[in-house]
Image (cartoon, rainbow, N blue to C red; front, side, top):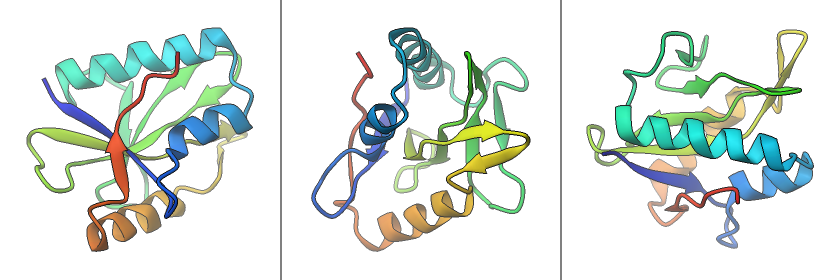
Length: 128
């Protein structure tokens, strides 16, 4: 089983939870996110093909491909501190017309911030 973490801002606010609130994700969306993230914790990157995919032009960044009424694309990385034992969710995004909002480059920025300050993550919190 892999440990899951969420990136947080300087005030220690969990950015994945803030994203879910900002996007007004439905109860069903949140439940689907929980199930897919639990699957990642259990199976790692050996999930169903195309459920996890690397993000183009963002080395070391992956996205979960979750389809509800909207295309949810939480971005994460292996580790980054214990690569074989943990994943860190860096950014929540919505994909529409093949464009991510916010852009995937923000996940790379968040990863770099985390590498400079280990305290910028918290244990993953379920969405409901």
